[in-house]
Image (cartoon, rainbow, N blue to C red; front, side, top):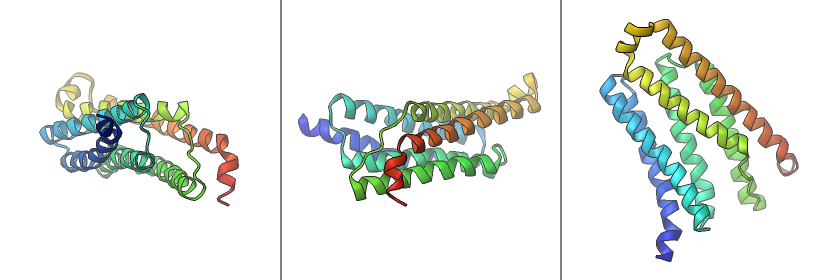
Length: 194
């Protein structure tokens, strides 16, 4: 049982990567049925993210492997979905680029500090809010796209576009703020990289 407790969080992190790839594949067409399948993969990947972190903390089995692969798996999922939605002009490309640059830059900094100086940058509360916000906003956008035809008949296409735009602006602001807060809180450790 001890070995299962040690390996289960790592396994959940690993399966998030193929789930993210399947999520992206099924989102490509933007048709309701494949989008529904993509959403199911997105929800499964998001749930494994929550579950592996919860189990690792509960069982005190946080591993170096998990510290490396968990943020990478998270970024693959979020950036892939954002990129596909930007490709189809649902989300402005500049917003996806801002989020991707923040996510990739901080992940690279975290990994360099972990490997070089054995420093683990602790997650900040704003980072948890950012992750939750990104997931919820993408979940809502998925549903707006899946049910686009009936929603257009009720509230119109302009209202749908305004809702999506507003939620993405909010997500970008939270994402950039959490990145700023992480950099400020860990300034001394990050200055060693320069």
